Image (tube, rainbow, N blue to C red):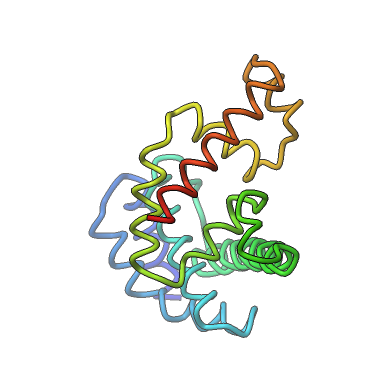
Length: 184
């Protein structure tokens, strides 16, 4: 009962923007949540990643947080949902990679597949970040719509008030830049 009250008080202070209370709650519940997450998914890395995302979200949205009576139960539910979303995303990426094929198909590869493929090498990650910075705002926007939101070129054109050909050319040019930057 004493911990429940302490967690509740820390939660209320976090809602008010107290970063000290945030770190106290983090210290008090982090390892319990990671262990819970491991029981949910069987993977310590996924559990740790999801737990980190839960706490990041809490701090980023502390002003919009609702009152919570049982903070650990609330966070376990939040964590479980976060883990399920992460596992689904990883499953989709793995499926896409299995369907990706050989190196010559990088231009046809989705943005997420492309990112996953290059994440194994720190230098390549740096090059990717640099390459993404070379894209225009519009190129980044259309890449996101095409590969993260999964929109067709027709849907992208409609949403951005461009012609289908312009949308296609913009995405193609962005992929060409990414490919060129990563080849060097």
